[in-house]
Image (tube, rainbow, N blue to C red; front, top):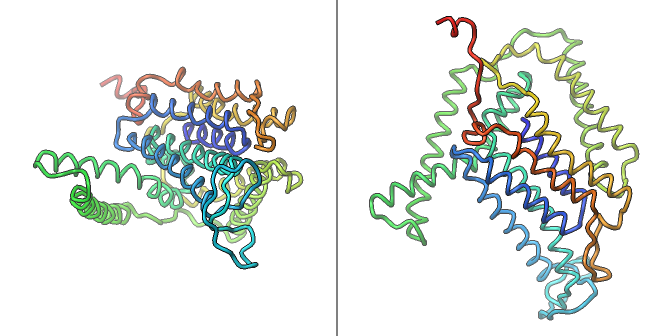
Length: 364
């Protein structure tokens, strides 16, 4: 959970700025942490995949601006053949003059989204999604299973592709080009179907969806109401906090109230689940420092936006080099701190940690 909270903090920091230098710094820090701390398990190979997805998002955003985007004024690079659009399609164009300012605006927008994708991709490569599932409260077990199955999609596909490619290399079959893609896609799809069948059988054998003690009607109403209200308040507060325009007044207070209400709902509904975990992973000082290191950049971004808003919201009008705020830059550099205090054993394995033996095991 510490790694996912660290990634969430880095993603929030990326959403709080349009300064390309800070965004590039955030992306570099996240990729460096992912490369050094990633697991040797199959899901550890997804760092490169998410980096390629982020680069694809940036290129796609620029291409969409060039071909279909709004024609922003500025220094014209080249002009594409234009197709007249009807009046109801205002803001959308096909062809026309392409300016440096328009490309820079699209580049910054794609860079923000790409950094956010890389943040959660790195968390997916470092921490096992199954371990994240086991660390969540028991009342969220069913929802967490669905989310974890979705998060495991990319790592499982990468592992399956690697196995099929290795088998084809041993048999002297092609692994590149259309012939290689055709020979890899079918076995990977078959492996995915087999895993789905095994997952369904495993969930049925473990009694997935079975509830424990049934609470009273008033307790059920209280827990559901608190959970729904808390989720809505967190959604509104989070949106208002992430947007710099201040569209929602009192957004931080709404976010805090939402967290409290959601906690009350989860705590009151926990008795419905009787699931426990053998030797749960402890959330100690190192984990807390990892979380703090992830949210320090976001806090520095907020402070810099309050002290010098112009340095955080960069615009190509006029076309000048973006300024670099010192406080935000220091916060971005502190995001790499988990490399220093995460134990080497966990960096190598990503899953297993040292556990103290019980008294019975020590006596034996």
